[in-house]
Length: 140
Length: 87
Image (tube, rainbow over all chains, first blue to last red):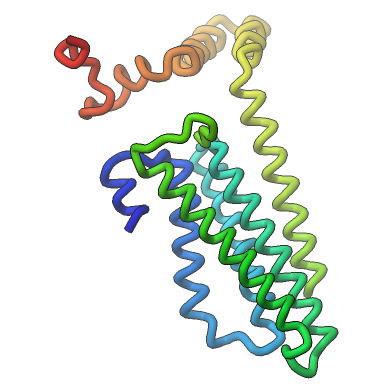
């Protein structure tokens, strides 16, 4: 909704349109293809989604010759962070293969950090779309 | 499998850092000045004329992006410079 509103009101640059289109498509496919995953490939699959967003965004930026804005690099950083968190949990689950009960604290912490980074990604989009600009934190 | 993921991640970090350095280099003012002197090393006059025209367009866009967009892009409510607005 925010993305469509931003395009309609002409408040998003082409670089931001590319990254948020990639994020949106990735989230959509992540939900539809989730049933194909198993106990071990669950977190690996989400890590692959993060990598796919960054790779596709970089690809379209290079092909369309669009310069990145600072906010897009910040989103890349958050996606890399998400990737490492997913890979960490994947490795721990491979070692502790019996059940999740002993690592619930880690799963909860990881979920919190991933959701926080997702929230920050949406917050950046909201800041770019809204008229309200933070003087001390110019992203573009 | 896992190592492949980390390798792809490292490659993407390297590509993004490389693209960032190229963009910073392109935004630097001396980049266009260096490109200007490179034009005169071209062999024929016709090639120099074409390269100079391309350089002027790029430099103009770099120096005055708002005016360049007003001249090049189709007029919208955002990029038209209106005297009524200023009054």
